[in-house]
Length: 373
Image 1 (cartoon, rainbow, N blue to C red):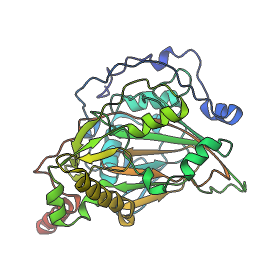
Image 2 (image 1 turned 90 degrees about the vertical axis):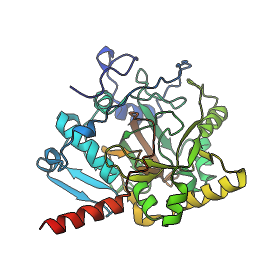
Image 3 (image 1 turned 45 degrees about the vertical axis):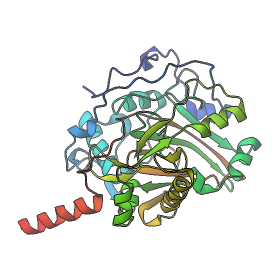
Image 4 (image 1 turned 30 degrees about the horizontal axis):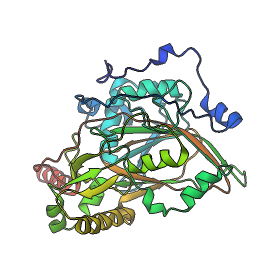
């Protein structure tokens, strides 16, 4: 039985009378998104049970059945070949949750997962989030659709006027209980010239564990115990710019600057330019200086980042509690992208003063293993 099943009040997938083929719809119609003027009530607190707690530390159900599993960088990013997410067993889902918590982001190419399967798959990992403003396919409010092309001058102008490093974020941290695992399937990549190679549109992920480990000890100690305000102001501004309806009020929430991951027990940095507004207890100038330093630290941390080149029908699974990500909008003159995202939510962020850094924990494990031989 999945750990998270009684969690969503919107109609179930079984009640959908006609399944949409989003890839075909996007190719034939273009931007099919709807923006219903639906009022949703405030999100209620809930007790999150992480399926990664049921995982095998060796993740044998994945490693014994995949054709190949390999790391993309020492710090973050792993690619899995030979498994279909649509066919994973419960134990494989549990092991995937732990693997993602440890490695930050996992990539699966050539996936047949459709949005209806994606909704059911996502429910296993947490209560699904319906976004306050973004568009979704008709009848599928849990799907956040992504569609960008060169024929949308308003979107092109918006992103070309922003510095790329402003795009770093972790998903929906302005919520009381933000995202845990997130799933994004990119199903259309059209580029010019059309020789089959992907041109542009990469996504970068950064490790929150690595970001913490690269700070000096005095800075780590200063940040531990501090809290920051997270806001959805950027989405409110976007709704005003586009005229889209805000379906649920945005409420600012306060979260720890250093967060402990419940599965790994590792400390990670938990601020980012997308949604972090200020540091609690510091005056405005102090807060701005500190946040600017931390934002630059994330953007410049190439030794704890992975840059991924998409291919059609690839799914990325990442843990927002342990990563930041940034989409690279460099393809507006050469093509379009389409994809869809599922966002399970997790526990309220917390800091455990007894938790360890990844570097510290792995060093202790290695020493213990060496002494036992």
